Image (cartoon, rainbow, N blue to C red; front, top):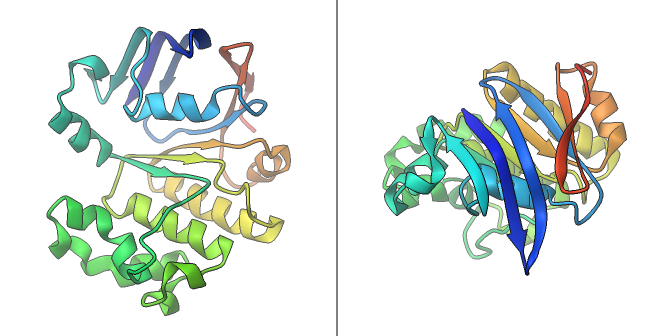
Length: 223
C-alpha cells in the first residue's frame, strides 16, 4: 500500500531522515513516535507525496512516487486522508461545507449524501451549520477527521491529532481512529503521548515506530 525502500530526506543541507525501509500493510495500525524535530511530520508528508525523497524509493499503491504526474498525485491523495494537528478551515463556511470541501474540489459534491451520518459518527451532527471559529479544539479535530475520510480513503495519516486536546477528548478521537481501522483502513498516528499509545492496547493491535537518529525503528511488537 505504502512502501519505503532505503529512503532518505535532506533539508537545508543536512539529512533529516536516513535509510528508512518500511511497508504499511493494508489494515495495519501504526503509532509513530520520536522527539520534537525528529522528522515525524516529514515522514508523513513523504507517505502522501507532498515531499519526494532525496534518496531511495517510495511506492504509493504500487506506483513509484517519482513516476506520478500532478494528476496522478491528486488522484492518489484521494485515497489518503490526512489529519493535521493545526487543522485549518474556511471560517466563513459552515462546518458541513468545510467537511465536504474535498468532494467539491474533486467535482463530486453529489456524493455528499452520507454527510449527516458522518457528522453524527464524529459527534457533530448538531453543529453542521456552525462556523469554525465557534468550535472547540476537540470539535475541530473531529471535523478534521470527518473531512479527511469524506472521500473514502484507504489510508488515514494523523499528525499529532491529540496534541491540543485534553485526555477525555484524546480518547474519543483515538476511539474513532480505531473504529476506522476495524473497517479495514490503514492508520498511522504520529504522537509523543505514550499514555495514548498504552491506552490503545485495549482497542486495537498496533505497532509502534520510533524515529531516532534519523532512522526509523520498530519500537515494540503488538501492543
